Every structure is written in structure tokens, then in C-alpha cells.
Image (cartoon, rainbow, N blue to C red; front, side):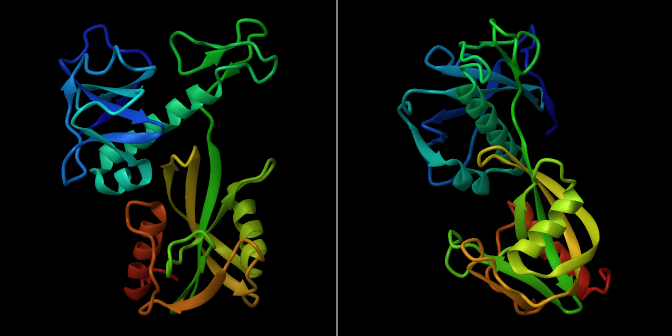
Length: 271
């Protein structure tokens, strides 16, 4: 199914709609043993919603982001991360998009320049201040991710908040004035005290916790011994490509980055 983004509903709405509804930032799912969503009647929950935003169409079916005061009968709340892991990829991505737009709307009800209540801007995804005309668009925070490698090994680390036994690639937010490449070199040096070269772009992923854009690279180790950054990195090690610890699932770009790079290294296509 192809998703076509839009901020203004079509003049002729679809008979059904995908409704990504949240109660206290948790996604609503039908009461069932599986994580699944189905289109609803187009008018479903519109009257009860305390906030609603049009997202576009998925397979020519309208999509809405909604905030409800409580879960309706027959529906249950689920943390967004858990829901995204279980939903089909297009629906998981749209749930993340919905969550980011609703959080932007919630956190920009007042002008950041003069404090005046803002209003939705017609025709685009923005809130505008009627007093000073300051305009707030949905915010993104770019972050890099780097899988450092050397022949036969990859460098993986764990932060204190990770699940027990879980390791991942290095990651960090881009600072003002930095390029993505600058950020990779700085974060790798800060977090594990090694140097890298030969950065290769792998891919990107919108990450709605709360509004990040993860940009992933591989990077070849060129020197230095691992020294974990105090307070940030609980442990970091070189792992043979055939003896990895627990790593993130494929629903996250970290899971794809690590697995796809290992497959390429094992097949001799990376290096």
C-alpha cells in the first residue's frame, strides 16, 4: 500500500479511514491477542477527539491522528514502541508519524517567542502566532548511528537503559553547526575513544521517541582502544561476526544495520 502524505483532507473523503488514536500517548488497538489495526468508518471517533490531524492516504484510504480522552469499549492501550514492533511496516511507520504530529501539536499551543496562544495554519502543517506571526513546524532532531567494524569484528555497546544483554551500534544527536559525518567522528571518539574512516551511508528511519531522524552509517576502525564514556556507555566490546550478543530487532534501523552489515561481511561484500 502506498502512503501519500497530506495536511488537508480530500474534498471527497473515503468511506473508511485508518485511525491512529492515542490516549495519554499510548496507541489504541482492538482488544485481541494480536497487534492489528483495521480501517474504521470515516466518522469514527471524530466527535470525541480532543485533537485530530489529517495525515494523508494509505492505499487511497484517509488516515487520521487522533487524541481521545479514554479508550472506547473493545479497545486497549499499548505503548507505541511495542505497537510498532507488532504492526505491519506501513502501519507502524504511520503510527510513529501520527505520534510525532500529535506531540508537536501539544507542545506548540503557545508561541515560543511571545507566549500568545497559537492557531493551526490553513494549507500546511504549521501553528502560527496571531500576534508576532512566528510559525512552528513539526520538529525533527537528526541523530547519527554508526556501526564501527574491522576485519571479522564489529564494535557494539550498551547504555545503562538497554534491556539486559542487549548491545547496539553507537548513536548520538547532531549538534548545531555539525555535518552528519562530523557527528559520527565526534560521537565515536566521545563514546568509545576510537577513530574511524571510510564512512558509508546505510539508511535512515523516522524514530518517534519523541521526534528523531536516525541516519545510519558503517565506519571502519583506524585506531584506538575502547574506553567507554562514563555515564553514557555501560560496556563496549569488539564482537566476532559469528558470535554476537543480543541486538535490536529488525523493526529498528539498528537491527537492520547490524544484521545487513554482518551478512555483507560474511559474504565478503563489505570491507
